[in-house]
Picture 1 (cartoon, one colour):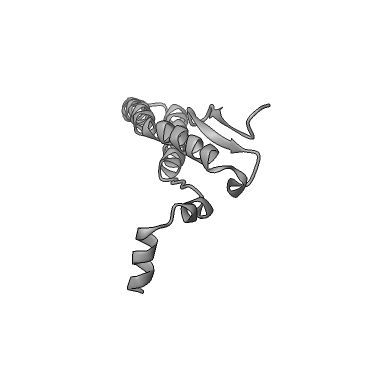
Picture 2 (tube, rainbow, N blue to C red; picture 1 turned 45 degrees about the horizontal axis):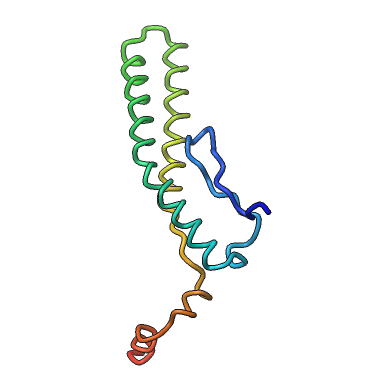
Length: 120
């Protein structure tokens, strides 16, 4: 039986992104934990990918500064904007946080929850 989720390579971004067949709440706690663990590994590589793309931008900016042909300069800046868009999207994905569903968190409730409720 295949999983109801997987991480699929997004060629534009150069990282794997989650593809879920079900709503997050329909996955078991174990499945959620496995997905979160894999996502955290993927996210940890995003800064390196951003750094690679920043080097591409720097190279293209240098080329644009030295270029005399206006059409070529425009092409270089179009490529810079495309790469900057990828960096922006990667930064959005880097900030995506996923947590085990509150339903499962409630199963583990105990002293901490009791303490929080008592302080209200």
